[in-house]
Image 1: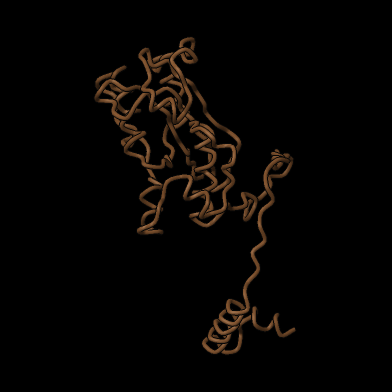
Image 2: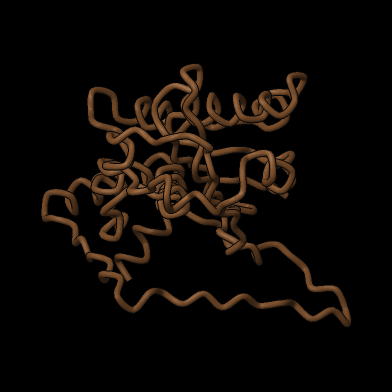
Length: 239
């Protein structure tokens, strides 16, 4: 079983070494390339003021966070959720820098998250796939046609959910959990029903152009020639 956690944070500012703190953590779980619906979400009282520039990004104020738990109060639950997983983070050094700083404030001997979890940085991945292009989360949503219409402000859980969609599309889509699996006698399979948000825009249908169809046929003919006239796709088209 491959367990991945898509993670995002919001903070009071840009630099933990200058005393800035984590104020929101959002995580969503992917198991064998399927979103499970399990998530971790927590607002955190930073016990300090928040930069105005940061508030403009995420909309979280010190007044709103005043009655929320501190990081030391939620650290154990957070670590239990992510323990041993593969973390998927956009611009990982930023989030890991803050989280590691918070963990070491509680325990100076605490290990860095990347020492207990493997990490995929989707910003690095996107730059390798789309060099020279914008690769922030909004740009990736536009490129991969992921609906981010609710993202008026940054939010850790919402951004983690959006990044999960982007990551799965960018790396080849979701995989059906039931393929190749066996049901044990007498054991009932638990079915999770996931319904699409009724307000979500319908997926666009992109039809191939005449040029693309011509290139597709040419490619199939090349496969047919190399495979000894056994290209099933071409045979099905002819039938």
